[in-house]
Length: 108
Image (cartoon, rainbow, N blue to C red):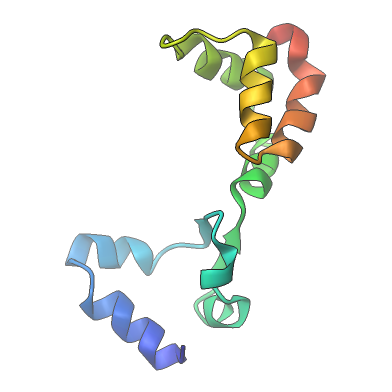
């Protein structure tokens, strides 16, 4: 993909509001990192991050234990214990997130 192709795609293939948002991104969060080449994204000042890496960065910005507890408590179908919640995150590939959350296990 050339820089021109990427810019053309962003400007033509998306409606104006979405295009404007895409052109302001600094991070794309995806498990499909192979489809977002570093060199192409760098041209626009954008980087792609795995969700696990993105969440790990958020730990340094907020009360991660409290936020994770709120998310877990909203799960109603079925409700999850803290251990089940961590196992579910691990199952979907968020192992770094789980490692960080284990520090807050008593508050989850």
